Length: 80
Image: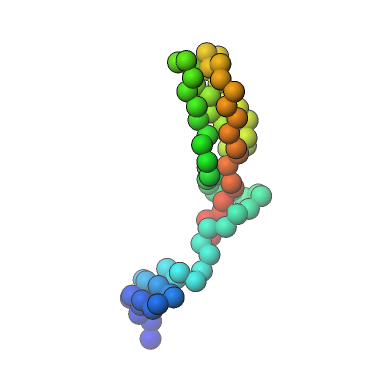
């Protein structure tokens, strides 16, 4: 019989098994991307200018920015 909520020391199950801590709902992928997750700093402000890193890893600035910031690209995720 399914349970609405089941809590064990190493497992959490809710909504009759629709949510289960032992399943992987989000996974890292190279194609079929749903979301790009940023893991570190991706923006910098210097002397009134702004630079940010796009999910693909490109640096984009507003033409005023004069710093040396280069962040890292995001991680592509698929929600299953």
